[in-house]
Length: 362
Image (cartoon, rainbow, N blue to C red; front, side, top):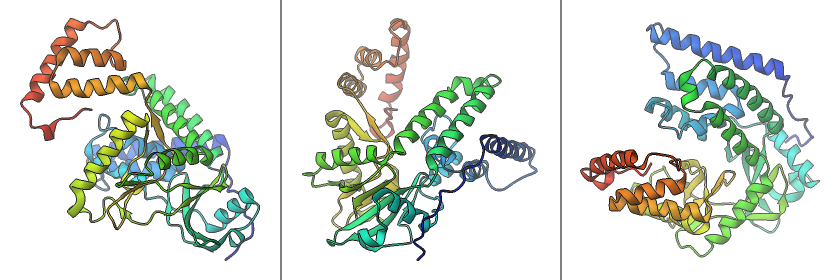
C-alpha cells in the first residue's frame, strides 16, 4: 500500500464550476423537454434527476438527501431515487484517507492501528469510513472527511444560492416552496457536518444518554483520536435495519419509536438523519445508531407544545389543536382563529373516519 502523502484534489475555479453546474442543469432541462414530448423513455425523470445531483458531487448529493424527505415537493418516483443517494456514493482513494489521518494525528495508520483496512466500510457524501483495530485490540471505525470537501461545499452552495435566487424571480413554484430557504438550510447543515469534533460531541452525548438502554446502542468516540477531519469510534457490528429483519420488524420499529420519543421529549435533541444506512441491528436485536453529523434540537417550550399537539390531535380536541399550533408558531398570532377553527374541525372530521394506521401527524 502506498502511504505517501497525497495533496487534496484540486477544486477548480468558481467560474468554471458555475459553468459546469449551469451546463449540467441545462442538459437536464433539455432532456425533460424531450421526455415530455415522448422523445426519451429511459431512465425515469426521478432517476435522471438523481443522476444529475450525483454527477454534480458532494454538495448536490447532500441536497438530494435532504430533498428525499420532502414528499410535499416530489412525486414518489423522485423520492425513491433520491433516497438511493443516502448510501450509494463512490469512495475516494485510500491514499488520500491515509494522508488525512497522518496530517490529523502526526502518524500514519500503521503506527496508530495494528490493522487498518484499505477498502472502505462505507462511503457517504462528505466522508468515508474504514474499519481498524487498535494496538489494545479494540475494534474501531475511522471516519475521514473527503479531502477539499469544505472548500468545495462552500463554493457550490454560494453558486447554488445565486442560481436559485435568480430562478425564483421567474418561478412562482420556487417562491412558494421557499427554495432559497431550503438551500440555505442544507448549507448550514453541511457546515456542521464538516467538523467531526462537533459530531463527536453529539455522539458522546447520545452514547451517555442511551448507555443503560437495553434496546439502543450508540458506540462512543475514542477521545484521544479525534480531529476536525478524522474521528475514531468504537465499531458497531450488525446489519442494516432494512436487511432481513421482518421477523423482528414490529419490535424493532417500536424500539426505534420509543428512542425518538425519548430524544424528542426528554433529551431535547434527536438524530437528524435516520436513514437505513445509519441504523444497524445487532445479533441480539439491539438497534445501533451512528453518524450523528446532523442533530436537531427542541427547546423546552417547543417540546411542551409538540406534546400538546400530539395529545390534542389524538383526542380530536379542536381548541387544543389550535392552541398548540399557535404555541409552535405554525400560525401567526394575528391569524383568524374562527376561520382556522373551521379548518381544524374539517380535518378532525376527516381523520375521525380513518383507522389509526392512516393517521399522519405530519
